[in-house]
Length: 117
View (cartoon, rainbow, N blue to C red):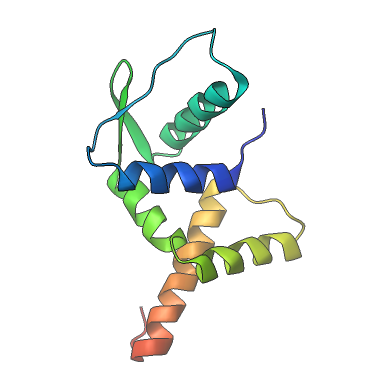
């Protein structure tokens, strides 16, 4: 299964919008394709340090996960991030996506305030 960066973004937004900080994910081999995709991407978010497992089937966003989400929340920043990746061959690690998005966010703040970040 390939990593889907749009799906990761939508999961992060979904988890942040939830009323509870605890994200419960049921596991099972009988899960359908969409459920397995969700499970796999939760594990990828954990691998990247954006989520952490707090119990067998429970997870939470990390501070780094919230920071990444702050950077990619803005549609313009997300579009610019994806455009740069596409313009340079279409491949980027999650770490590079995060660095680009944070860079674009810093630039927006700097352009609007005159402060170099």
